[in-house]
Length: 291
Image (cartoon, rainbow, N blue to C red):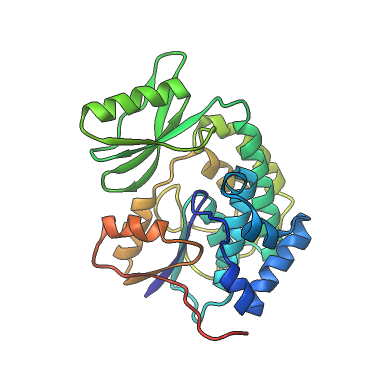
């Protein structure tokens, strides 16, 4: 049993998806549809944009989603299950048939714009803590920070106000952990995204949802998403809740998944899975030939 996994913001890189675009009509069709829906040249965004510009939330999320769906379009077999990291959960929902590709492009375009707006002003920060256990939340009445990404054993990302994140960084260093401040100005997956999440919920109500053809393991619980009865509320909650990536992977392994395919640019999720279970293979989509 193979599960497909989809990366999130941070996996972007200039030139991403060029080989898929050049070699496969199905991949080009994804780029062209997305360009028509969003009014942006997604080929130019992915292939010609410099790293700094591409890293902006409104650019990174569209680029990552586009390349992931282009890779998914040239797959040879359907997966037994799907999951995605943060933004990648939107990709997983599209891959599972809960959202059409046009509506998924609309959703990602709106989501990225709302998250960018919520991050303006530099009032948030995020940091990766490498080594040790996940820290406890911190709050002193002014500053605050909480764990938001439970990636794998010994790797947790925290988010909050810059001052609050700094406190958790110092605590982590004191216990022997390494700290990497992320190049983000927003406190993603926290209460700072509440307004963005509420706006995304209202926007999602304008989209059409269908029953999922493939099980989707959700970041919110690490378990299978039970259905699509209220996906707008789910998408809102996913914006403000921690990403339980390690639990997603462990749940899929318990359910019988024996291999993963990372559909998208890079190998960020493969590296995390190797720290969860080194024995399970994680492969990229590597279609042969040209279409």
